[in-house]
Image 1: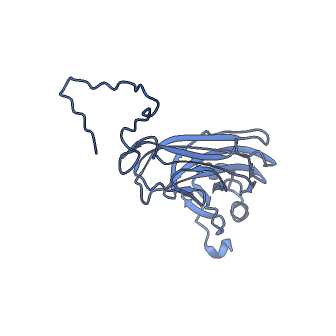
Image 2: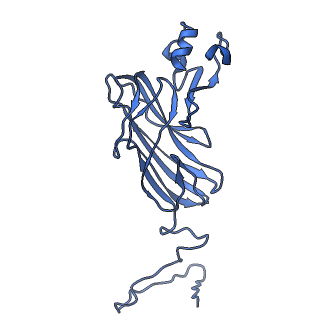
Length: 176
Length: 54
């Protein structure tokens, strides 16, 4: 059975709290099908649990080998490929703290294999250079994907492994 | 790749590889295939051949 509530233009519908212990749950609408509600918007989070040695002055895909959560099984091989079209808040962070020295540290969101949004551009003087990126990205729910790339200029550049310093996460914020 | 290019062309500096303004972009997709030249727009130096990079 379904219940549909209609209101004329300018009118309103009020929902009144329940008064019995057995009917406190209201799902409007149900978290299924094409309707995006908080219960079925894809979200993921992963981090690097191993140091990653890279080449100086080379944009390198960061390896995030440990998942914290992946609600829709859309994260694999350090790549997020959502199966639901929409707008996604994408966040990434890297840290070159395992390098001997650094003079430049950057991060970038790559979309479909190409650079898309730059993050913080640092010119560190020592061996610490944490940088972050954050952006809303439209993903078509089939072929679009995003990855995180890092760029370090320095000697023996290496990306740190740390769940709170080197991470990649995101979540849908609006359906297509 | 970075060291190889600087060896082939000693005139190259870090600014040529600048992530924003550089004319050369090197990339590694962490797929086991190693570093490669993603963009070469240097105004005077020719893009090296595969043989030169081998």
